[in-house]
Length: 215
Image 1 (cartoon, rainbow, N blue to C red):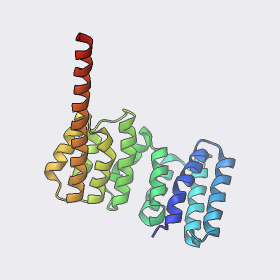
Image 2: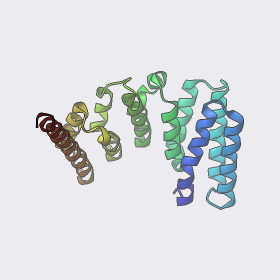
Image 3: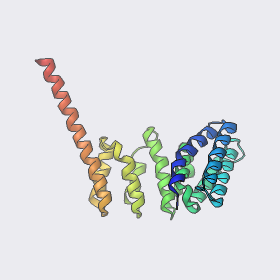
Image 4: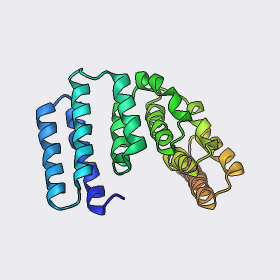
């Protein structure tokens, strides 16, 4: 189980890892080690967690230095997602940072992984590329019928902000017809109703401006 204190450090760790990934190895590593040391000193990181964090940092540093290729890095993250429960949120953030077109090609079989968190990580990667206009909504559609409610919920929560886009509105509407879990249905309905209200508001604003110009 992840302690609340460690949860609060995940964003700081991610920011420092981003510096490391950008090529600022010395300062990035120094910052990460400082956070880990403070976490250990406060009792929020036990020996096992510290070991897992240090191992992750070593792998990322190896990747940045070219000692670990992209395929190997993706496999290491996948393995860690399966085994290291307390690092999962951080690992998903790191994966999203690394994610690109070449990464997706290496991750195609992640959608069939028996571990839901691996499929969620893959979903987050694809969502980043969707936001950048690199992939279309079709690559996300398969997650709408995933057997795990955790994956389906991750899809809905990730797409909710884009519900005013016709393609996303359509996907969420289709999900609503199929979804059995009440909390996921509620989240879908909230996203759809928000999109409808937003469209109504834009229409009202358009007509208000039109009437003002003609008055």
